[in-house]
Image 1 (cartoon, helix red, strand yellow):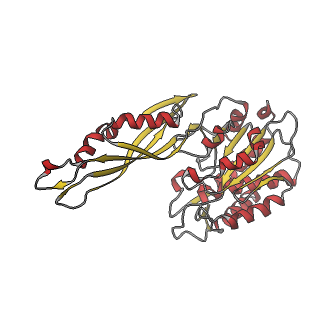
Image 2 (cartoon, one colour; image 1 turned 90 degrees about the vertical axis):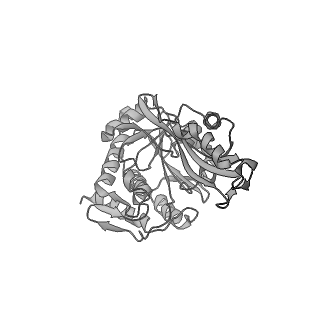
Image 3 (cartoon, one colour; image 1 turned 90 degrees about the horizontal axis):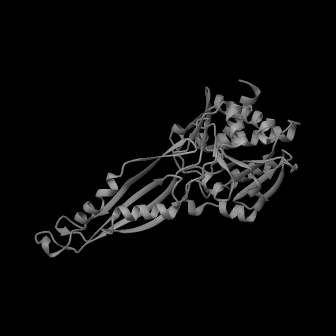
Length: 362
């Protein structure tokens, strides 16, 4: 194992071994603060939810912002972590403590030598990403630290199997409610069966085909799914209400308002629609010197992000953003979550090349 690989593996394992389920990130935040302060990068913001360090600004240099969340989903008997052959295994290894380790080791490399950076570098760590977007601190962090909007590119270190994934789908959650009139099941004509109304009202919803949307040469697939249903009182009662949960992963060519309008259009007035959560899609912008240099540095494929990530929050603030991380998406949130040490080293080496590439600042 190379020295870089050893450091990355050890850093990832150290992060994994600090429990940091959403809303309980204080211990890992303290660890990150101590390590980042030791790099010599300047801490520009720290409020308990967001932590931002950067190199000194240089006129004419673009600012590249690396970003990652500190929290994980709940444990599944996968703590403490361990190094198992070629992998670091444990809660959050893929999503996204491996990405955090790469960020922290890059910061140590920047602060511990004269690497000849072609760009200015910022490092942003934040909490509560694994919760509904309404709980995300990212908008408040931007309000408290407006200099983040100076970034020419944000690289969100979510697991992407070491591909550059641009944009992201929007995410709308809604409840469709179908109302009827309850009655005795022996005399159903005296009532109005909400299940029957739901069957008719859901016909167009469940028949929706995936929609392919190409933006800047990247293909996103928009999908709408019914994900839960509840109704009925007893076997001898005609029910007066059925609730159906739907999840609409909408393409970046729709706004949240247009996504809601599409759901209402499909239900067609047969049922009510209550939107409970909506996160906008991420804007796609990939034909830039920075994104081209990033792809070139690691020979990374360029793809569409077929999910929602905080890229959407950065693009909403006017910052170009992409996803890139060493984590394997197939292991994110799983009981046997793990990350390849070789992929950690690949990301780290490529990003060092990217940050020193004169063409990145062109």
